[in-house]
Every structure is written in C-alpha cells, then in structure tokens.
Amino acid sequence: MRKPLHYGLLCAAAAALTGCATFDQLQNPQARQAAKSRQQHETFRAQEGWRKLTYRSPDLLARATSENSSVEISLQEQRGILLVDGVVAMDFPVATGKASHPTPKGAYKIIEKKADHKSNLYGRIVSGEGQTVVSDADTRAHGVPQGGRFVGAPMPYWMRLTTTGVGMHVGYVPGRPASHGCIRLKKDVAVQLFDILELGSPVTVDAVAPSLAKVDRAVPARSGT
Image (cartoon, rainbow, N blue to C red):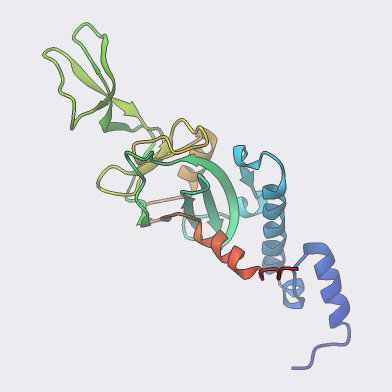
C-alpha cells in the first residue's frame, strides 16, 4: 500500500523522538513506548558506573504480570534482566556461582517460591553451647558434632529453579561470582521480582542475556578504515 505523502516527515519526527521509531510505531502506542524504553535502557548503560546500579522502567513495571514477564541472567556481566512484553523493564546486578560451584546454564521455570527460606545444604554448624564450629558448612561434606546442630543459611524471597538447590534469593552481591550456585539478588530487586513472578515463570541463564545478544547482533559492524 502506498505510504501517505507526510510519511517521511513522520518518520523524521519519530527518529528525533526515539532514535529508531518507525511510522508504524508512531501509530502504535505500545510500540512507541517500547522504542522509548529501549532508548532509556541504552542511556542507562552508557552512563559511568552503571554496573553497580539498577535500571527500572516505571511504565513497563506498572503493567508487569507473571504472564508477560521473564528473567534472563548474564553470567559474563553478572547482571539480571527482567523483560516485560520482551522489553527490558529492569537491569540489575547479581552474584552467580563461583568457579567451584558454577551456576548452570539453561532454560528454567520457577518451581518453588518461599519468602522465608533457609538452605538445607549450606549454612553453619554450631556446637551444643551455641558456638560456631564451621562457618561455611556444606551438609554433604561436614558432620554435626554430638549435641550440635546445622543452621541453614537464610535465603529470603527464594525462587527455586532446579531440584538440586539452585534458585534466586536475597544475598551478598559484590559484583563478581560469589555464591554456591544460586543467583543472589539485592533485597529491593528480589522483593520486586518475587511480587511479579509466579510458579512457571521462565528464567534463562546464559553467558550473555539472549535479549541483549540479539540487540548486539542487530547492530551492523563498522567497516575498518
């Protein structure tokens, strides 16, 4: 179908407003909002010190539901991405498994949610007198002395991904891999994800967040000079 005569002017206006909007996006509010959100996310990542910060799109988060939301974890960047309708609504720091306990790559679904969860694998072992005997205990490797007990590490806002103990939860996020395989989150992020996601919500763990990798591949490589 032949485009209207003012098509070029509208496209130019779209480009000025969003940087990459098309004529169709001008006529589609949701597409226009998606283009705006993508530009805002690019601006966030262009600022100095962004890796220590959390990006949020209030407009996208306002319409986030368990049906239109998914999470991607980037092991290389130590970042998590919340997608709403396929657009980045949150971009946040995480801490995945260290070299001795790597977080496994894969496509998962949340199979358990528990706001007040404690690990049955990792924690500390205390004596009968209440003194810590092993501060970084693994129940598969450390025995409990007579009269002592195992105290599981707290994992608030637990969202389980595997039957072998990998999940997302509140924890120390130092900007590098640091966990026993779980995906640690800052508390404000964990609370927000816990409220949005439900059992069955998809979570993808990969070297690079797939949605961002697609964006990178979509940018033409510059020829050398």
